[in-house]
Image (cartoon, rainbow, N blue to C red):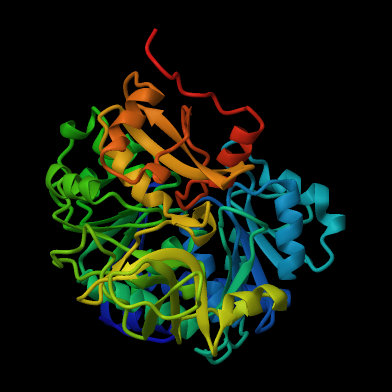
Length: 528
């Protein structure tokens, strides 16, 4: 494995060492680049950006679906010494105005549209409201008065501009979080932090040259552009890309490309695991994979390991603010389904009592906090939010509930701290109830949350996506002999699907609002 503290330096090293090996593959468009191809195009685009006026420290945004130009741009921005600012592909008009003005991006590279989202039309329509933006660069299309990606690449190939010396401790990326509540915040990450995190993850998963790593995760997400791309880069593995998730497409890609590593979230794994077409494909090339982004059901991961099969699939845990992962197991760790493994090298992790602020001993649930060199520099231009997140000399408050077991493995045991329900002074962890209800054969998915209660302060509610007909009385009876009475949901609701963030987290605040407003259907109490 090539361990470097700057992504473009690592790409140049791989280009020298294994330049003819395949580095990027997008089967849908038949595009394939070697490490030498990738390095050449990234260097040329970097010189084109410098000639355009981009200087070290400038923020350069990208709005595009997963594609080859995405990965070239990521490396080019690093080579130019600028700060890479990828944007969520779901962003619409107001989201784009906020993100581009908050980031202060001087340039943006964009495709014309993706699915029903007209990126270029939207950007041109709001350009007068974007005070910092000087350049719109089109990918895969041309537009009068705008520079195209192809033209900038061609210009860079003839340019004599010098690339700046890589600075590993400079900000390398500004990634906007996909939190379940509030306005997204931009986490500022250094080159060294991202490379250290991705490299540590690749070592835990035993990724090597020759591995072919595919993923359902959008590249704008930290798990996409850091874990998948930078982890694979350092290992000399090939990134096998798809523009967006579709179960059958993933089966086709895994079979045709003989992929060995797969990254996803629980919802994507379930969609593939339960898909009737899965058994028609040869997926036996898969060796390992990662599942994160939401609480993982160990039983589901065991099914994936044996039925897909992905024998060494692992549960992992992290946040954008930590340069992606905090903890990951070894690929052959026997606890890889039920825990997220020990913290990555470079991280200290502690569990804090939400009530007292004291450090808890092993096997006690509290807030997960992490400290180390891979933690973000802060939220860009948001000192108050940064001060709330980083405390006591650098400990990050993750807001997630979990525990450290006797062997130092991290267990995501309680959902979000803000999701914790306080009923009459009793702390109730939704994930405990969710795990129980998952055992009922009629329950496909479940989300537990608190609703306002005049007497207790909060009462427990549960929304389910049912596999077969079931009543609230049946679910109540199922819970009655298994958990304390005060934890049993008072209200059951039925949903066709849950609102999710791009990383697969359930937007519980949205479910709660729907329930309070009467917009979430109440589950039938008894069979008629």
